[in-house]
Length: 112
Length: 115
View 1 (spheres, helix red, strand yellow):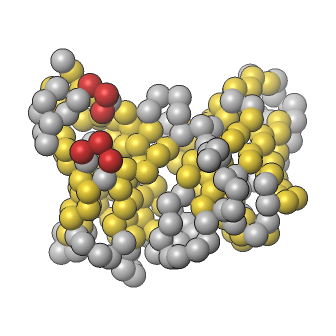
View 2 (cartoon, each protein chain N blue to C red):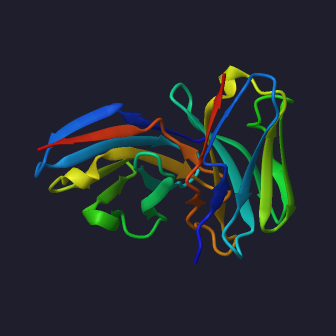
């Protein structure tokens, strides 16, 4: 079985500060890993995905994530937070391409 | 290209009533997923279809829930009878089956409140 754990249901940062959202996964097979973002009253949209190519993955809106097998982690970072980054972020893991298992989400709050 | 289209966007209904949620996947996508999102349980996969055939419905909570996909461009999720604990956001999503790791695209959700 596969699972992901997102540490921290809420993360607060100031505008311009580093964003770090943590995700740890569990998988008995090589995983595919995803970060999705959900803005208020909207569906989820893909930020980035890891598919066993480069371990450092760059996504949209300046976000990136690094796959670390030794730590079973796939943390999401952005060097400088913007007010528009305030949203809920979901980490997800899949193996076969049909099913994704999502984490419980981390709400990012950005203050001026 | 149009994204995944869901209707209704919002529905308020009384306990015991039948609820039907509708989804039009992205044209050409042959996988369709229904997810439910609640504060308590997060995002749960309810069921998914491949080429209109249900593949895995193990996430469907109980017999009150049913889903159909009569053709490649339409799917329904039905709750009969509805209960207050069914209140949630229901997302439909789709993806192409070409390649191993393709993005799943989500609709904007159907916000269901059962009173």
